[in-house]
Image 1 (tube, rainbow, N blue to C red):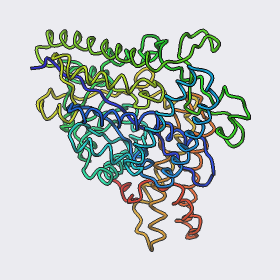
Image 2 (cartoon, rainbow, N blue to C red; image 1 turned 45 degrees about the horizontal axis):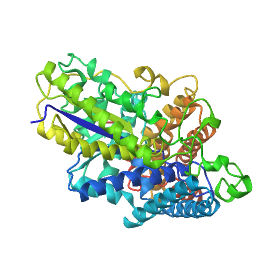
Image 3 (cartoon, rainbow, N blue to C red; image 1 turned 180 degrees about the horizontal axis):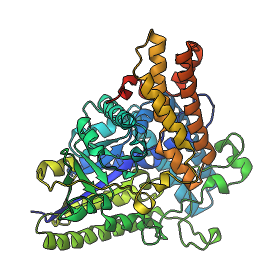
Length: 528
């Protein structure tokens, strides 16, 4: 018998970035980069584990906006174009580097990498949800949902209908995509407020994840801290994040991704190649951007001139070494916890999925080595996913979890501060208007469609990504533009519904632009 459990959780999320009104929008490439660098490498890892008979267990959230984008024909076509352009560029790089042995070696590496992406993408008929669903149906992958648009729920709690809409739309869209309702949820930013657990139970969810202090400061104090889940009084289980294992990967100072052997994220061919040469592969207005082709390793933090050429062989060796180190640290940790707890602890290690592959190129190799080593080389802990763990351990202490998030200082200030506070009066007013609209009975099909589109626009405006971007001061104009555009569309529809002057042509255009949740029913906002 194992002495404890290790549960890896990958949170896969992107905001809804779909812009058919423009030939090129940089933000759509957030999705394309994640497909090539994170989602396809993870799927290939799952395929390899399955082929080798390794009954792996992993928990992964796929948020509703991400699921919608991965299934969208327009974005699938755009990804085809993106990948074809990248493959064309790497062929030019092979020719350009034919006299430079190391650069030619790296160019060939990327040629194989992009070809594998192409093959996997087409093997699933361009719908990666099919792949994730397969591994869920096999029992390996426990797929969580999230709020409908990754809305920050504690800042909506004064409007229970808004919280309910985020949850209910998420559960319904998940059921449509995966053929079954979700069992668990990744709360956006791990943000929890007391009372939310009742809504989670009512919408049919069994468990969620919070930061460690959400469990540590529960009442009464949990006997086992974050190393065992607790059950809320509504019956929903709460898992707490483990700081120790998180720091080993996340920390900018001591985390694995900062090793000098690994690939340097910030030196990309798009910024370094001759301008005329790279011009066909950057933004059409001539602005440089990342291409995904990076030839240097981290080497040192002392500046760009100090960067040496990358070597995937030695990087893979280092990933195996780090996986071994991570595994042995968990063995020591779980041995220690088992001795003082007198029962099997669970160490929950959650990470943004895009860390693995996109930010940390070697991340999928690390995960692959870790899962294989844990399967073959140790017997101290059992890797599990959250659904399996609760099936095996159905009895836990009952407590009331504490308010928390995994943001800076552990609460809500990262999403409510002087950079983004201006959005909330507008969101709150729109929410009040939506609740009133939800009581209406449509007079015809057009009014029905307008009411549903109002709900979509409000949900899209509520995405926590926009407040987060404003706080981090990256891509701020885009975040402001998205918040304003959704609120303006909502208000125009609201006024048209109340004034009886609905512009049908404009409504059709907005439905096409913001086409998320096609089965959405605006009555989800009716008073509870």
